[in-house]
Length: 77
Image 1 (cartoon, rainbow, N blue to C red):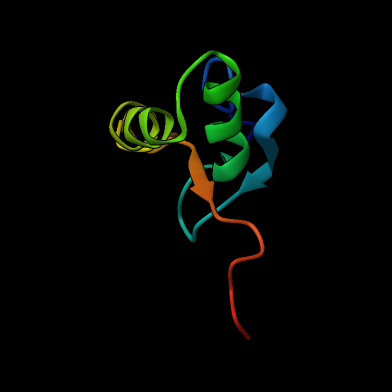
Image 2 (cartoon, rainbow, N blue to C red):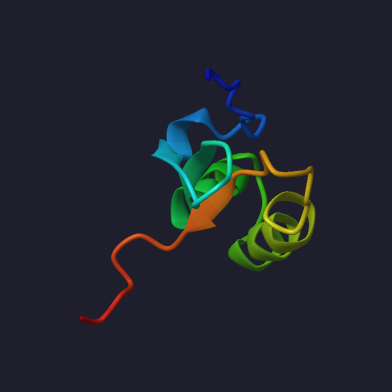
C-alpha cells in the first residue's frame, strides 16, 4: 500500500528521510537543529526560534502522519 508523506511547510532543507513505527504509516523525519536554523534565517533569535519550533512545529500533532523531528548525532552509545 502506498502512502502520502505529510511534509512540514518551509522545512524542506531539514528533511533527512522517512521513518516508520510498527503498524504505522511512513512519516517524514527532520533534523531539529536544521529546522531551528531555518527559523533563524527568517530573522528569529535562537531563543525565539526554539520556542516557536517547540510549540508550533514539533508540538503540533496532525494525526498518524505527523512528522518526526530528531536531534541528529546527540546519542551517546
